[in-house]
Length: 417
Ligand SMILES: [Zn+2]
Ligand SMILES: [Zn+2]
Image (cartoon, rainbow, N blue to C red; front, side, top):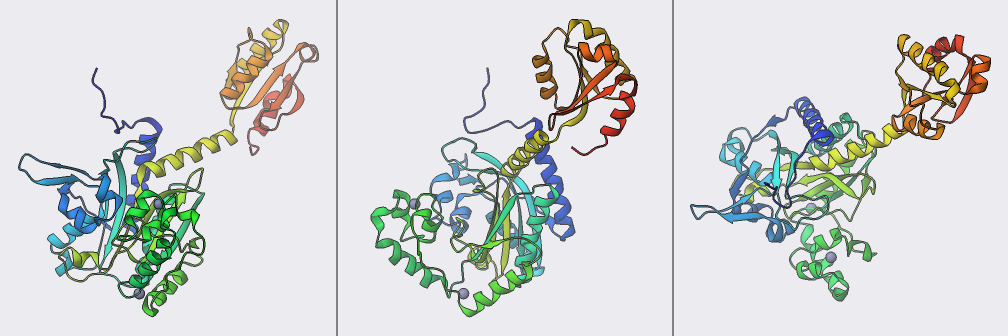
């Protein structure tokens, strides 16, 4: 039997549905912000990612899905979208002719990391890259674009963290301060961080093992122009989105400058579902003109999982207006059966009729089918011509005459859960 390659995954059912929903929401929001679609190749020269993503990042060092093709070219399946988009922006002449341009992409990315629970070698990212605008307004609207997508999808519990990483003027001092700070307790760092301390000390802040270990870590002191930019971004965002300023937020890539941000959501609320930042020097360093830019990417599967989690939770909390008829005794079966058919004739969604099971098993089925209401008939009820109506959301029950039950149900089914 043919088998899927380890680390890859088939997608169907709810997850496929949610991914499509997310893509549709994103397209609508992008249109509202005047962002155009850009489709770029899945493979690029490996060099492109080394130059842009940065060779001190984990992505390039360990996780790139790279190989030599039949023409002896070193190529890589794209690990992220930004480098390809920047290349296309330069190569297609936008940088020269029409620099103020924003693009979005929807596509699959690849990482050759060792497969672990819930992480796959191929995954979808939706991202945006906005070129040519250095104004803090661009930072703010880029972040709000992401918020609009997340909210139009219906995701409620998420958090936004924002920080500024400074610029070529103020960052080197911070870098050096971090190297000094962490070098003093180098033996306490994990192996990865020992290794990257000199090359990329900011990443130590980001490390899941070492990040929480250190208190009183030196904070970035922004130069006046970075500080002014950051203050303005914060002012523009106030009242439009809930966020917190997190000085420990650095993001994993080498090319970020000034504003960086991250959206986290999910059960443990530690799960980054999207993130991005400004990268004002990348276009130039990749051979284009000096050009400010900012962008973000969201992990489509991560967002879809959060949505699925949330929906499952809500379904648990809301029962459907369905009625389950229960007979407590053999002698009640005829009456219960008649009631069931009468309800259906009157248009109610009615389940039940498993009268050969005991009451507990019947109740369990009502629960399994997410019915809000149980209608119970026992020997007393048969005698009195009545029926017990039980609300399964709060276990409250009340007795009604069988002759009036239809009109009662018409009223209760409009009550709020
Ligand atoms: Zn600065
Ligand atoms: Zn570490």
